[in-house]
Length: 390
Image (cartoon, rainbow, N blue to C red; front, side, top):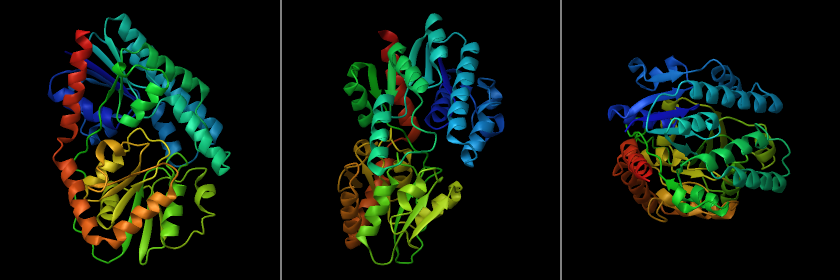
């Protein structure tokens, strides 16, 4: 069995590439990352299996990261990066058994792979694209937000993704929540496999706790409407926990100030911006609980990373929370748009420090007993084998 992977971004696809390479199953990895960054991520660049076309994506991602793109330009450059990657992947296919491409930028490559006799796997890291657009539009209307980073989902992206879903032989998602959104949009459950992500325990691990008796709530991700940060800020404020602090790590978005600046912003709430992994690890080591208040999130790998650092987690049900959180054991699942539920869980963890410590130990144990990205890779291989015998 030989596999071709194609992904504009890194994340789980790079972890899978390294796993398949060690098993001598990777025929080719098609990426849009520059070679220096691939080397930094310990990808097998020297093997000549990695094909990269970074010339369009790298400058776009840099400008996106530093918030230097107006919404209309960001949308078109994003679409352009998808187009160039897809065509580069299409031109660089070789004979293999399975073409596994991340959604949104592999439609033409997937079609070509099928013409060459391969099975086509569409890997989608979030909920069904139409569901995603609907729920974010709904949230924008609820919050009176007219402009968000990147704008609402481009209709061309929606069209491309829906064609990828339909034309692929199989669809991978990372959470039960994501699978449910596909079923609600008319897909057979047999076409969709849920394979939760792994976590690298050599990169995320418990550090020595800095004892200062402060109750710290921490969040990591974009400060966007999709991530529901306004509900976390509201919950933290209304909980009014003595000697507490809320740390928001991540990039500010166009809508950030609209969402949280009018929430009686105070000095207990810290916006750190984008930080290095070492800085993130230090802040996680100082924290009491991690919260992921997303309106919609395909999984939320940060949940596993926080758990690996020994933190209990609170997440909405529209994430991978229900797949990795056992309520009251290693964290809590809460409804979306419920600052009240988040507030109640924060107060509970504050008032029960021994219970919090026990849940933190359970969180670490639950990710430690899983075999990280190797377990993820083995589950992917199982599905590949089933696809090939159909």
